[in-house]
Amino acid sequence: MKIYKKLIQLLVAVLPLCIHTNAQTISPDLQDRDKWRLVNRIAQPVTEEGKKGIRVSETPNDGAMILKDFEFGEGIIELDIRGKNVLQQSFVGVAFHGQDSSTYDAIYFRPFNFVNTDTARRSRAVQYISMPGFPWEKLRQDHPGKYENKVHPVPNPDAWFHVKITVTGKQIKVFVDNAGKPCLEVEKLTGTTKGDFALWVGNNSGAAFANLRITRRSTGTSAATIPYGNNPETGKYFNAGDARLYYEVYGNGDPILMLHGGVYGYISEFEHLIPKLAENHRVICLATRGHGKSEIGRQPYTYKQRAEDAYSLLKHLNISKASVIGFSDGAYSGYKMAALYPETVIKLVAMGAGDKKNNASTERFNYNETDLLKTAGNYFAGLRKLMPEPQRWNETLAMLNNLYNNDVISNETFEKIKCPVLVMAGDKDNYSNIDKVVSSYKQIPGAMLSIIPGCGHVIFYCNFPAVWEAMKGFVNNEIKKG
Image 1 (cartoon, rainbow, N blue to C red):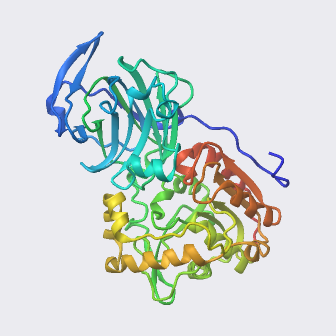
Image 2 (cartoon, rainbow, N blue to C red):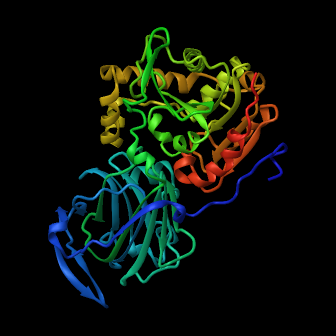
Image 3 (cartoon, rainbow, N blue to C red):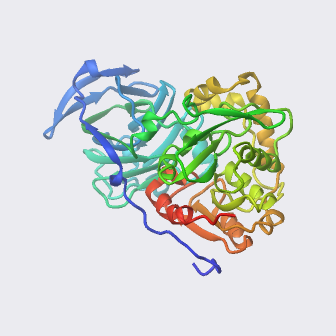
């Protein structure tokens, strides 16, 4: 880690999923037909080698066996699977976060590749997909080797093998035959956080399934009982010039302003952070323009505008000084706010936001209503119900594209920041890679850095305990009054 010349903090402990509370484990009877709904398949009870389960038929096109009246968000899925060693006729696994029969995430195996003499095929033994926007063909073409891998230890392709899949926020890990290390580790490609669970088989494939156990977990009861982002008990509006913006306030104490991410982001993404912070602070959550219950306004989006909106909210609440916590889009807004209003921002936590230079060669954003509804229809349908101007959604997406493609947050902003700053990111962040994050950290005088290992962009969903451990000392230090 010598490249981090001014490194203050590097968090390396990854806390296991088992620290989550409120776990519920079920073992649904695979042979009870009343509990399951079949899609493009028939199923027959089977008992093989002491395993009592179900065998799903082989038929053209994908098929599923969906567990009725059950919603899976995050937790652990364990089961035994038996496919066969026949090329292109054994695609077997599970689907989750299903919104309908064509919109879901899935992990599946290709047993015919387990011991294939072709090393390229062996590296395609386990696969993640997110339908309909990210089928295996697109993922292999755009991100070769990222969403598929070989399996270890290597099972007999004609025999039963044991699978464990952990889903923690956006982080998915796949283990085979009780291995200590995952054979596949990916970050979810859509914003869906819950939905149907199903046994899944691909084109011309059948399979046997047994010993299914599903453990649903959450990080507490607060997220389930408080409708963050749509809370009539605390939600209010203020006038930010050409737009009415929505905000919520929780807890008491020194103020902390929360700035959420863009497009997929909203106040609700802080559902686990808010109750923790509210134990000692007055937590103010702003819905940025065009997100959730806030209006869009008529002016093009800029980070200067977002910083001014946040500053206006604090003035509206008669708050002269506050700490700021921002994620992604909100972190860039936090950088700009700290630079423009140094007398107001006491300290800043910036998550998932690195050096953002004006570079036309980088990938251009092109968010649009059609694509987002295809990839995460139910999620965005819920957000649209909150919008005061849903007919302008494509307009706000176009302004967000312009913001992300053209606005700059780099040294011209970083050098003006005077407050303490904690820069945080996952080491596998695809939106703002670690080099850009480290670059921003180096340019901010006296900044601290915390890298959450094994995580992508949404670090507080990937490993909330590690994020909180890195953050709490920084935000809970006594705030100097002035």
